[in-house]
Length: 430
Image (tube, rainbow, N blue to C red; front, top):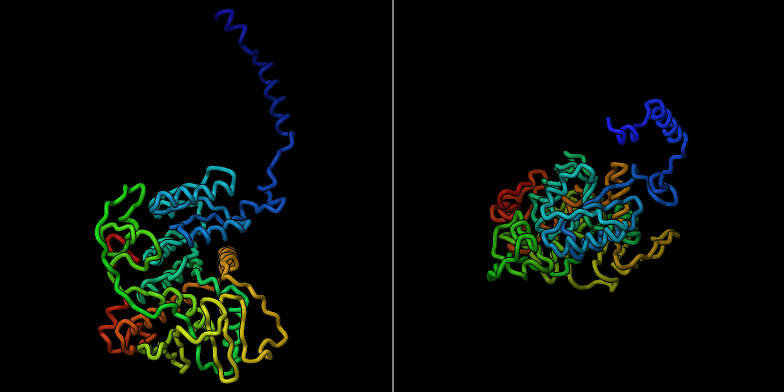
């Protein structure tokens, strides 16, 4: 052994003494744990946090994301979008919120759903994707907040409800008005008999027309990393790239009956009417429009009326409930108009205008923890959407249709029954 090697050699006894000394110091030294890990100073302990990912975060999704990020028990960790600019934009928002660079980005939502650390997802794609993405998320063991309209047809509505029940997932449709106090109070008056026997519930469709999706001229298709056109179309029938289809709010990117205002506003307004009738099964009869109104009837005789005009100016998404002993009307201004102030029974109803989603997001998160059903659960969404789809079919056919809630089909009506569903493009399945 060289002199240099001997000089650098530590005697065994001294090595053991130094090791024991260092170990003892480590054992008795105080362990410093960040307050955030213990839930101190207003922070939520990691064990109580809900880890969230986002799928399809555009304009509405960015608003929803802001509502999620306000909640102290949310940790947003990943975003998936077919558009590169949106992936970059959402990552920037999340990383700024947490002061790091940890938000991951994906182009294929299945990769995001494969992550074991994600508890729930925000689905804010276009309506073409909502049901397929929701069902895929449920099968991956994720809870979900899904923007509306949540389905494209009656068949999807039924499968959505059955899938959430079978998988035990918490599903919240983005019908945020269910968690606003003035709408909730109006529905309570109708549901609990305070208006007397309920005779009519009115919903605003914001455009009473049914359309078939069109076909636009082919334009140069962007690189897949920039815009994944094939994934954007997803389960819809293929068509050539066109920027007008890519941008804006589109119900459908393939064949099929487009919902229009009956489905868009209807998924809010009809949802509230469904709540007013105690979330019973959808109407069984739908008539063609007459004098600006489309009248549907529930099995008990109560009428669901879609109408464009004749509303008290209370803001967008108005609803009205009429009983034998009184009526109530409400809208997005946060205000109520009652047939009699006696209906208030001394109560004060908070006026929250502008239909914020914060309360609805909080309801969802609380149910993720408790495993209870949120206000906009899958069964409620299913029934409200079936009512919208059936009304849209009557509108499209220009005649009366009758729906059997037990068989989930139109009675002796082959033409209407063909519109209950549509084929999905390979490889997508519900």
